[in-house]
Each structure stands twice: as structure tokens, then as C-alpha cells.
Length: 182
Image 1 (cartoon, rainbow, N blue to C red):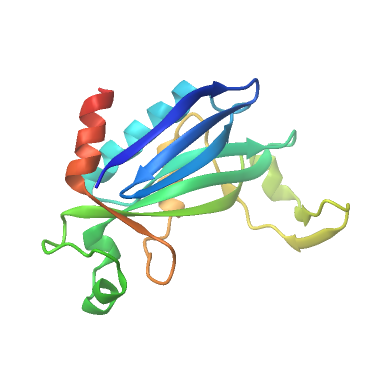
Image 2: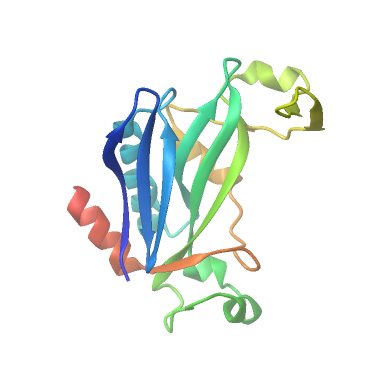
């Protein structure tokens, strides 16, 4: 198995094409470059992986920070959950793919998005999901995202990966990635 996350040479004005290799799976994505540059995304990835490996706590790789003019939008992410946290009970261990023989030999990655804001004032009003036809749906639950300190976002993350799509990666693959990006 291998783990890599990178941008291709295909960088447009406001987005960059990237990919993440999760074992035998290759996922591609586009990252919005209006709030974060390619270099800032790469620095966030490296810091998150380092924190997860060193402290053995749940972190996340920012895939795309997509904000509107009011500072509200979506954060697309890959959560990194250490295997000993994801499989902290025998029942959870049986529900996880490729659970390691040694409980702390790897991490699980999941993909999701969260509604975020970069402005505290957004919490003073109600914000609703707007559909393409102009109508409104459910009220959004927002999470605060400090672009200058992305590690503060880790506290919002869920560590339960059972019953959702997840990929296992051994610690050695993430350590190998870190050693090649140093």
C-alpha cells in the first residue's frame, strides 16, 4: 500500500487539480485557491499528518476551502483517525477494513465536508442552504475555521469511522510520505 497526496501541474487561476492515493485507490479532487494557495494546502497536509503520527490523535487534510464573499462555505476534507482510536472496542475493530494486528500500526482516512465560516459575525445570524434555483433549505450548522491556525479545526472532528467509507493506511506509508516532503 502507498499513501500520497499532491497537486498536478494543472493549476488554474482559482483552483488546482490534486489527487490522493489511498492504498489501491486513487481519488482526484479540485482545491479552491481563493482562500488557500497550493503551498498552504501542502503545509497543512504535512502538519496534520505529522500531528496525527506524533500525537496519535484525529486530524484532517484540507482538500478544498470553498468560501463565498461573506466568509461562509464548505471545507472538503479527509479525516485521519489513528487505528487505536477508530478501533477502540472489539466491536468497532470487526467493522473496520484491514484492522492491523498491532492496534496502533496505522490510520484510517475518511472523506467528508463541513460547513464553515471564517468570520465570527456569521454566528450572529441564521444562514440557510441555498439551492441552485434560488430557494432555501435547512439552516446550516457552522464550524469556525481559522485559516491562519488550521490545527484548531481538529477539535471538531469525529473519530468514528464505522459504517462510513474508510481507507486504511499503515503508519509506515505516512512516515514515508513525510520523509519525501521534508
